[in-house]
Image 1 (cartoon, helix red, strand yellow):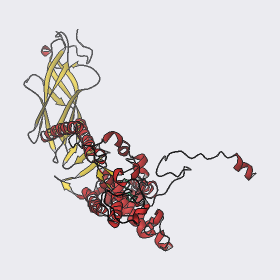
Image 2 (cartoon, rainbow, N blue to C red):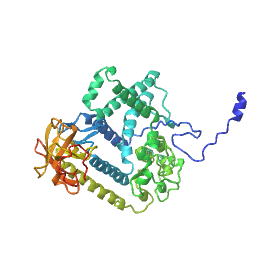
Image 3 (tube, protein in one colour):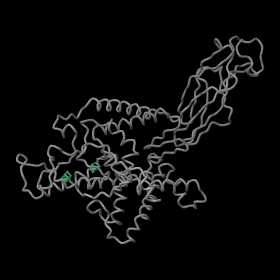
Image 4 (tube, helix red, strand yellow):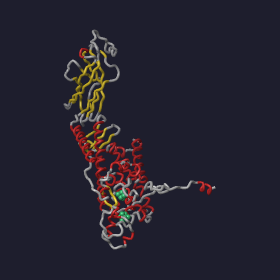
Length: 488
Ligand code: SF4
Ligand code: SF4
């Protein structure tokens, strides 16, 4: 029975080309255990990475102008960035900011390639400088062929996952501090989970996702899931800085070079690459840089460090694999200034200048006056035409503000909020119904344009134009019935 089933099983046809560096030819996961090369780029990246981890952990605790340096309050739709708070009414400012950041990413990528991925992306920083060190500590350095050493005791190897969990708990808590604030987080951490079950579920889910990412999914986040990684082919050009293998110098490869005396370039019979495959063994995404530019390359420079080490040992010049642009690698002219860079720069500078100007000139509060739904107008007991409006006020300051509403330059028209008091706490928003009353004689063709003014207790004034609706003809008697006297 079993042998029949085996016979009937369709034959496995392996793809002709490599599909993914993390897939075996039969489609199963290819687990990568990159070796470590402690060259000068790795040492520089290590300093940058630990500095970034420190900054990431410190930012939620830093205050600027009595506000957290970064606080992304999704529930209340308020985003505080370095002392300025984007409120729900700041859609335009937020859009300006987002487009500027996006253009900044395009600009840096076109200039320096995947420098973000290799040097600053949290995925790389935590994977290479937190989780892999834990792995190496518990499982040993990766030996030849990239397999973990089995010399470490079972206990030490078993310690790996509790340590991963601790790291993920730290990351998840720090990450959530950006969204809920450190005070709220402290409360959650010190109280029983039963007092805030939803917060506990969010925390546990975030920790679980981080465990999944750093313990299982790993380099596949960069290769498959990251949209920035997928965009590389359109963001880069032949003059962008990349990590590349110098084919002209390296080919044809020959393992014999190890035993040959060092030859000058002119009489070399083979290229400088001795086919030791160290550049492949250290690659965290499992690719061979000698096959040319690949989307999986995250620009971590581990292959440069490994190859430089080899070149130094065999007495050849360093830089067989190096930071270089494609034009430079092919011996063609390299242009630093390109039209697309200038476009990015000009548009980005314009947008950032506009954003800074708008933020600098922003008043202490926002006001929006809208017509209320329902009847277009009605007559009051005093034979005045009345319209209902909604006045939306937002206090942008960190002090309470009182507001007073009035109509600009026309004492015959009055506005009165229907609520008791127009007082807003710091950062608070309020929508207040208000009624505007005007004599019917003021209306021309059933319409009257006026300006509503709001004066805050700090002296700031804002005005907004709005239109009242009223009768086309002035009635001789009071129609008295609200809303039934529209026009004629
Ligand atoms: S590390 Fe350098 S010498 Fe070794 S295989 Fe890679 S490119 Fe060739
Ligand atoms: S090819 Fe080199 S730079 Fe690119 S990911 Fe691999 S080791 Fe890093």
